[in-house]
Image (cartoon, rainbow, N blue to C red; front, side):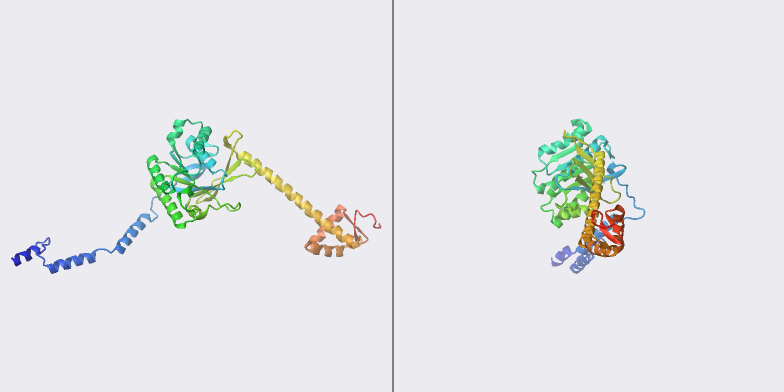
Length: 384
């Protein structure tokens, strides 16, 4: 009986030989030793990732496909992320309206669509529903397209009241359902608890990069710049991460003292997009404002030149006033040498420069040289 039980517990390998318990244990141990460790498995996974992402001289990489071009310069490449930045209320949403209009109609102003019947997904996390709907109304006014065409190509969502935790998943669902070629996120800051959280910002930008590549679309993120007038950087760690990874960063600026909004390319991985300008008319229409901006620039240039001329004249008068004061303090007459030395100290100028001033004043007859002494020409008491 014992012998029979022992034989029943033996293991027969494929060759039919009976293995005793000791052999079984040795085989199990051998197989366990031969299995890769968790660290080895991880290294193999990383090795495969490296192989998948290695670029060789014979690697075929498809050319970038842009959604829009301005004067032949493409922007918003598919399978990548991009940014639009500006101060608060500086025209970011208006610029996006023009981009949508160009995509739908084929061309608006200097913006030309490079996509055929494009699908556009728009997430608005900042405006109320009325202002969000105004996006479609303004696009319709610019393009003269009917509601059926616009609604079939633009999926617009007002998400101002949605929970932050839901936005990222909602974006993935919307992209999966609508299969857009261009995704516009007006208010990407609402996707994070804090734009200064470095880890959260990195994770969001990484996920957007993965999503744009996987869905074969351009994802355009809108973010405010810092509040200081001279600071044009996007806010917080989120802005830093977005600027680092974005293929294109456009900046909207509202021209001082006017309704003109100028869109420029502050950062680009390849070529920079030429500037373009838009404006609202008195009746609320969005129009091309390139010529209007050019007139503004010319006017500002003329005003700047006038200010410079006035400043130069003021400085010239101040120098002359110093000269006449020195003459007066010396009893109304002073040698040119002494006047030159005095003015060098008062004006903090080199002797050669001051000598030029004196020569010009003599030429203009505001001072006169009488017997080697310099007099104020307006003082009639000096002897001739």
